[in-house]
Amino acid sequence: MPLQVYRCSDHGEFDILLSFRDDVPQTAHCLTCGALSLHILKPPVAAIVRGGTGAGRGNAAVRKQLAWDTQANEMQRDPYTQAKYQATHMYHEQKDMGVRVDKPTEAGLQAAAAAIAKKKR
Image (cartoon, rainbow, N blue to C red; front, side, top):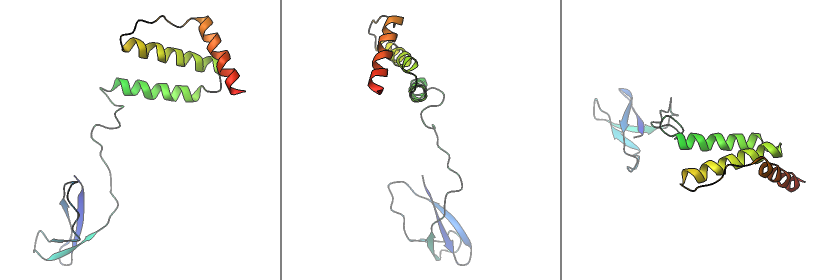
């Protein structure tokens, strides 16, 4: 719920809590004297996000995906490491969906690394 700030000429600033669905009125009545007060724009002092980014406690899948993205981006220069991360990610993704898959082999990782290195040229 956004707080809107209004300024009464006699009593100073006051806040009104509005719903996100409501339009912001340009004037509001002062809570103390009832005089018509103008809406003023102010930057937020602090923002508190309840629930966070989705990567907090209880969101292991999101944290895991963020970790994979970060690792993959950092390891793009090394074809073998990139192939290893991709194979591990795909293995766990398929396993989580209930598909029976074999673990990646060293020969498979070497072949994937060679293909990645060939694409980069």
